[in-house]
Amino acid sequence: MKFDLDRRIIFVLIALAVALPLVFKLNLPISVTPEVQSLYDRIESLKPGDVVLMSFDHETSTIPELVPMAQAILRHLFSKGVKVVGTAFLAEGATVGDSNLSLIASEYGKEYGHDYVFLGYRPQYHAAILGMGEDIARVFPEDLRGNSTNELPLLENIKNYNDVEFVLSIADGNLPDYWIDYAWSRYHVKMAAGVTAVMATTYYPMLNSGQLFALVPGLKGAAEYEILQSGQPGKAGSGMDAQSISHLLIIALIILGNLLLFCSKRKSQKGSGNL
Image: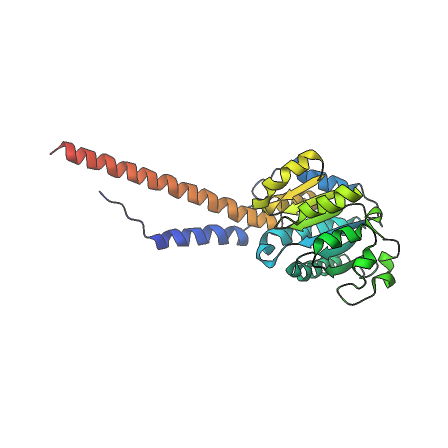
């Protein structure tokens, strides 16, 4: 006996498994891991007026995974009165970073130049990261909007890494490696990273060695941070619901397929035995 399941039915089921949790919030339970809690606790310890350097080191292909993460962290920073200096070492990250920084800053009534700035994009990130350890204004004489960095009130007392609390790299590649190699190793600036899920295993050894004090891994890490920051899931939480239901559906289909195959073989064996 042969069982056939039209593949189009599977496509529809997967589409529903992804779409429905995004429309109807399931709020599946999310446990917070220590590496995410470390970043939250560090920001909680900051005082109003402290400065954090946030680098958007990713491309547009990872927006669904990294933008909810960046937004949750920015909301926490601005809610604490912490000032943010943004930059990027990938060209696409500059556009995404500036857009998100401006969006979240507007939610909290923050003023550009006083509460946050976006320095923009620089190629040759090796030299740029090293140069910022000596003089940020020399590496970025102008911000993304064309303002002289020497004339921005926020940067008047920010010369180099000594004047920021820590650096956070939101990345989809290996740029946190360079931050660690050139900023942490040479200038001893505290480092944290938010990375895609596929990159997370690369950075756990650096977390365990103390080169990173915190790590936010992928969409799950972003969902964890949303819970810590606001007490309820946001975009990342909805994404995790959709991902979880999709995975459960795929597992169920695999089990169903194997059961049908097993039943089919049993019937074939019985049919052969009666001959």
